[in-house]
Image 1 (cartoon, helix red, strand yellow):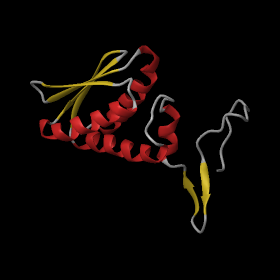
Image 2 (cartoon, rainbow, N blue to C red):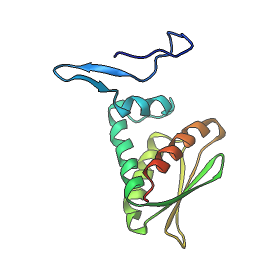
Image 3 (tube, rainbow, N blue to C red):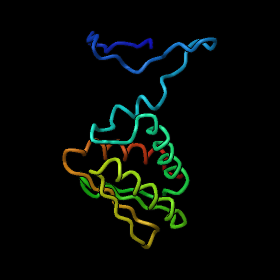
Amino acid sequence: MIARWAPDGQKDKPLVGLHPVRRYGFTVVPMADVWDEWVPQECTLPTVERPLRQQEFDDVFSTVLLGRERVSPRVLRWVFDPSAEVTLRDLTARESACCTFFDFHLADGDAGLVVDVTVPSSQIAVLDALETRSAAGLRQ
């Protein structure tokens, strides 16, 4: 990988950059590398499966997420189209299995299927990153 270094000259902190791809020149570092930056050590999902799980979340964020609210530093609330309940129950169950610090609570609400995501104080940065991803995919 060819990386740009941090502006302050710290050579031990490369920024995301480009890496050479044979016959194609350069390409951007895959999102999986960015995903891995905030996945906590407690996560037991195999590394090769993480981009697939990320894509599953991105898909529901871009297709059935109706709203989001940060209830508290430790709680993020999403509202989804109720038609996605089976998908969301499956996805959140699998995510809880590999990242046991996540507590997903699903309930019917007036505006749709409400999913509250709660994490311990030590995992607020993970919840912050998940909130950012969901905001990027929120249906317009």
